[in-house]
Image (cartoon, rainbow, N blue to C red; front, side, top):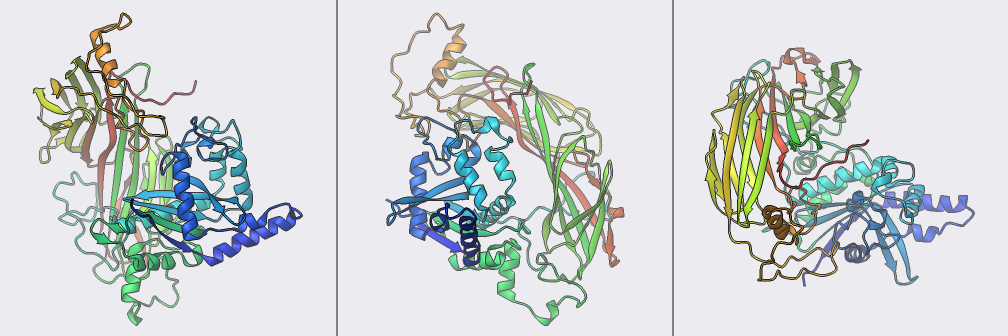
Length: 611
């Protein structure tokens, strides 16, 4: 048995605020509130024990997320809302009084082999509201957003957002996964303008001091308990530096209030300290996100990075879905503490659904298609703005995918795609690859010749390289077809260990004797598909695109030259105060996210549209 080790960081100031709130509530209600129970906060061992007990009760670390037959009234799964897999509650069992004391809302974030728990400070009334929700029979996703639902309750708690940011920042530190927002720079610097292509671009080679971390800062929120538990306090072969983690937590959120979650800033300050050369001008207040002042050659780099997600069905009854999520990454190598102002164009309200900005940004002016942004840039690479929207030019790749099983171990497929239809220069598709995954079948052969590109296969997938790097598609569209067959290793009966959250026992092995098709089977294909999928487990909520009873193809690509949402920056309109001579470079990169072509002839998940 592997021993679970727990590490906890408590903030006495926040605990004092909570106890004072409990005492005040008790006095206001004439002593009817059990303030002793509410004031209780667990020790490390009690927290670890209660967390393990919840795992046993809810079936897994995350929990069910939906109400099932095993759900008990008062538990997270009783709430019947998937958000309870991320915002959880536990009950501390105090042996002296033989009572259970609730802790909610505990933010659960899983990173690598670690579980990170963060408990933000909320009002006592919010905890009482959650207790009531846990006892109702009509709660859940169906009533989300209405008064009294969990969603409505969480929307009233901004500290939960701050706690999520703290959990993610800690997860990146303990896993060593701290990548900067990508900023692309031309090999030959220019004064700006749309780039026709990012081919030949290079990464930032020089770094200001300190190197920026992915999360530059956070929304302030009081946090009372942060706990990390794991089966081994190490990351691969590298031991976890617990002292460094304690330093980060204490420095980034003094007294329990997050100020600057930039790990690079925190660790660099600890390493280098401050000298007289680092002092800011006496008449200027230095922000927390810029503890050191940059010195050197001045310039500003902007990169718009968009990710396109799509679900293409090619069915009359299910509409296709396509969306764009993007961010404006920036690196401002400017001396002193200047303010930077720039206009963002293309912010058409019909295409852009939501916007959020870095805490250093001010948004004084907004027009129908333009937004002025002023900000005091931090050190290193940072995300100036995030947004969600629609694709103004339509899907960069559209078409259909069909897969039909002609026998138990062979399938016939057909792809018919159109690339960059309606797209004009300077938009350039630099590469495009399509992958057919078969996670439960072993591929032994693929037969077929595509109209363009090359094919290859691995043990559990088939890959079609439609466009390769260096042979991009500029200012024109192409049609691509790929008919073929895929052969699998003989289907073998398997014993599936079903999740306890959905099944009370494991599945029996299939019989060696093949069953004859019954009269209610329409054809051989339906019989074969029914046989191969009848024992497949249900949806794994952690990997929504590995549903074993469904089949799909996933497309990856990269487009340069312009954004698909229409958002852009004019480098010539960027202004700096106090005025300095600094070149401004601007680039755009569009990549595919979950760009899915669902099998037209198979099962597929879809969102029910409101009538």
